[in-house]
Amino acid sequence: MSRNVGTIARGIRTPIVKEGDDIINIVVDSVMEAAKNENFELKDKDVIGITESLVARAQGNYATAETIAKDVESKFPHDIGIVFPILSRNRFSILLKGIAMSNRKIHLLLSYPSDEVGNHLMDLDKMDDLKINPHSDVLTEEDYRKMFGEKVAHSFTGIDYVSLYREMANDNIDIYFANDPRTILNYTKDVLVADIHSRKRTKRILKDAGANILYGIDDILTAPVDGSGYNPEYGLLGSNLASDNEVKLFPRDSQYYVEEIQKVLLEKTGKNIEVMVYGDGAFKDPVGKIWELADPCVSPGFTKGLKGTPNEIKLKYLVDTELDDLEGEEILSAVKQKIYSKDVDLLGQAESLGTTPRQITDLLGSLCDLTSGSGDKGTPVVLVQGYFDNFASE
Image (cartoon, rainbow, N blue to C red):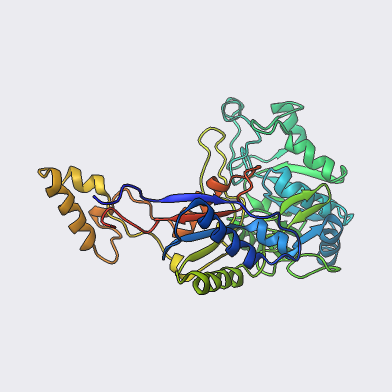
């Protein structure tokens, strides 16, 4: 084989981006400068991933608790039932603070034993010992404390989220635990759906059950309030804590940015490079049992070459089955020939058994998220090379 390296992911450092900065040229210049200084070449089908926070920051896409409160006030005249928020200081605490600033009484329904992304409210073994049935039992906050204690710390953060959410709502809140969203209708018919990936189903169930006013977190700040940031598609979904009174929203117009960056790169390099905006990766932590994806999607914008799912042959399946009797150069040639002649769509065929039938953007977004990290690496842009190559690529 003439090639010894497959996929390479590089974290690309950029200047510190502020509101109003030209994010298109910052990304292009940073990638080209890295290629020059690190002595590598950009190629067709390379992929550039840009973290969503970089785009949102350049847009100035921020909102305060006060602007959240104002939008909530316009939608809910009385008590508000909030259904199935995730347990997160970063993702939900400021949203709850803003909702509470509307001065509406809050009825908060938490799913258990964990939220939808795997943050646990209670120990599963103790729940079994107490013979709690999560499919039918409704617990009050008083029940919860009697059963699980006055402080229930999250295994990673050490935060008692029930206490935190009560504090963020200034005690103007009743908290319940159940897994049927219709439970909230026992306390109020006006509901704000706060789950992420199951939100459409939750809204449908509540609508069918007779909810009066029904919105989702994705319906709050879909338009600016007093000049605030907004997101017409996702509202407050995908927002992150920016300060103790402000959140950064999921970026707007991501498709425009990726297509413009691709266009500028083609003009400057002659290479057709794919571009995507990425947020959370779509993977699960095996220790904490937390599913990383708290954004509404992995990629809110990507160029057309990234659409679809991989179409790959499982090499170890071939080697262990129909090519088991070959060795050396003979097996290398046979494997390459199988790759050259593979069908356009291998879905359901034996050769593809064990490959991952996930969206390309979900796979690449996870790779980019792990490469850039969420701390102080300072590489909000990721260059992935060789991702679309295979064993037969020279």
